[in-house]
Length: 237
Image (cartoon, rainbow, N blue to C red; front, side):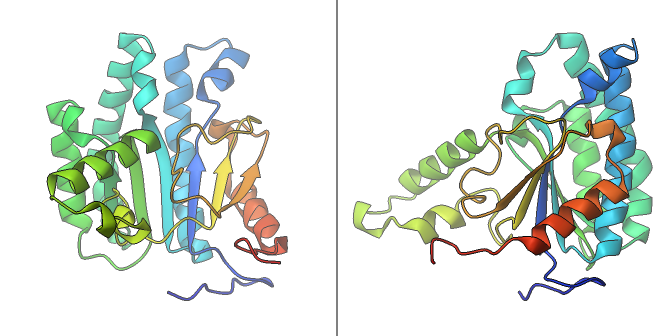
């Protein structure tokens, strides 16, 4: 699939992935409970989905809940899952109306039943849409994804000599989805935290000090502008 040129100069990334970090710090700076940071973070999700759609980006992947996030207090985890479930029910029709196709990746089987139903309903509702592809990584960890891919290959009885990069990629959660061109992380942290380790091998990385709940369309556009200035070599000169 060809990369599109945006309204400004340069090439637009086909796939943007975001580590949405800083909800807790945003709440702490305002003397609010952490859950208020998560609530504000969902508004940032809405803004960025619209920004990606308007910019012409074809794929947007959001790191919504990692496999490590289970270590948080149970009340916070339950709140997050309940919040996701409610918002999916509310936002599903709007996303469908805007021609956004929603998919989920991660160890979905471990999630609460009500959340899984909401996720399935949104996927079915938006299945035939042809606009922005929105991928939500929930209970996702890249090492776990690669482990799951290896187990699938072993179960298939594939001979050692037949195992190659293409086979591994075909067994990842992201099969048929292009690798991310740009990975954004908010809040000033400079790491990717077990996110798309295989897929982002040659992605451009962009770090911003903006906390996720404050991340706006202008911030997204600044990341795209920075991407346009990069020269991607993929190991070459």
